Length: 434
Ligand code: GUN
Ligand code: ZN
Image (tube, rainbow, N blue to C red; front, side, top):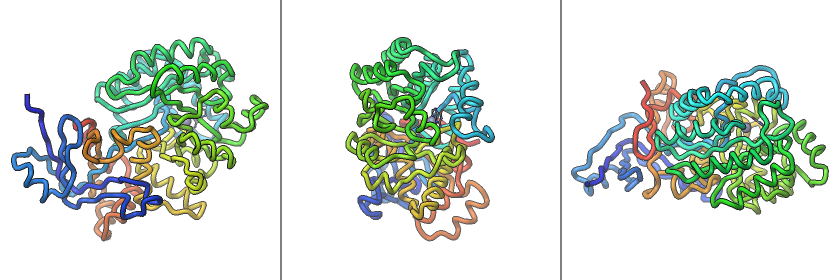
């Protein structure tokens, strides 16, 4: 059977490098009238429509007038069981966990609640143009199987893991070191590297794991190839003091994870706000990544992420929403908040940098840049169609822009789920705005 080839014709923008390293001009490609050609879920060609059309005279084409196609967004830190916790008032991290988050996570002992929430959550990601995410489940293994099943139905590239948590949490939310190892193993066997799914070993954070649990987490990483390690690091001052008290023999917070061989080139640490120089150096040396979660960091009053310090140390940084500490599923809104956080430290993120952080940098943090993160031929066809007239205000404001850089800036400041006209995964439309 001849495989189907489809073209999408629109303005197109994708990032091919970090603009602060390559220089802005080398960091992106923009086609005002572009053509993206897709074959068997992958990108076969990308270029100017006028040139490619001559090579594909019989091509079936979908045209997207007054739109901009960009790669699917990549959210490198999000908690699906906290979907209904978003916008919970008045606390900082540790009280917020106890008063809002843990009660909500306890409801995931019910497999039906897991399924219903997973379907809602996946749709919410797609509605916001997010095609890949690194996702926390709860302590219940059923929470993760429900998420993977929901993602797999739409052929999404997703990464998730069961929370490992065997102390300092309510009884109905704790496992044991052994059961966390066994349950994680069962999920790895069932889902890791199945279609586009991957597994992340997910100790919640150092305070809620015993030494034995952290050691078994490290053992899992040794036993299976290409597993991720996903956890929290250095988000809040009270949390950091707590870690110091629980692990007095370790030289800093990151060293707790390092001691159990959890700092690898497939480790993603969420927040990483209050790191010392040696922690930054160690992250860079290990080629580990950090997820900058600006809407969560301001909402929970955790602090201002220091992007320039991380980049000075060559630490790979990507963006996360951290729902439900974060306040929006939209990576456009997350870019806006990242811009504001950096402004407060006299450091401007350019629009190209923001789009890089939300796409290719996420892929690089997840070591998936050969599969996702931009629209290079050979990549999987995950992309978003942004509407340049999404709201009357956006349409009006965009009449005044003269180049793609200004257009991107307007989209990241004024855009949200309303700007997403449709979302494609592996070449298929998985969300279309009504
Ligand atoms: N640290 C440990 N657990 C959590 C969580 O669920 N959210 C955030 N933001 N930080 C954490
Ligand atoms: Zn988190």
